[in-house]
Picture 1 (cartoon, rainbow, N blue to C red):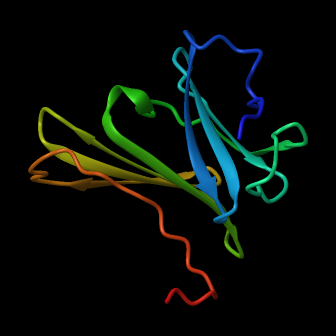
Picture 2: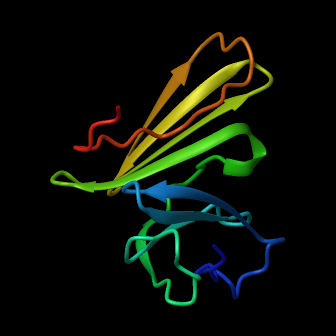
Length: 139
């Protein structure tokens, strides 16, 4: 499926983007400005189906993260992120590893709060995926 991303007017040389899954059947795009490091996260309004041609995809802004000294996301290996809107509010979880020193970092952002967790002694770059619980049994 092809669709137009919500950040089409911005140059790819000044902004970096990562595509992810949202709620198991929708898309999410994280875009970070290289100059300000501000992050915008967009999600698709409706479920994405196999037969969709992408023409009717509607993007809504999920959240904006403006935290001083936030890391540049795509400057690191194995970057992945997850967004959620639960009872406790909108959340953004970012995970990436660094080569020197070999560490992994997890950032958890909710509102104006940001928690940074360091994971020491990462042996090699890690592959990651997001798990979204489902009520559908897998045989």
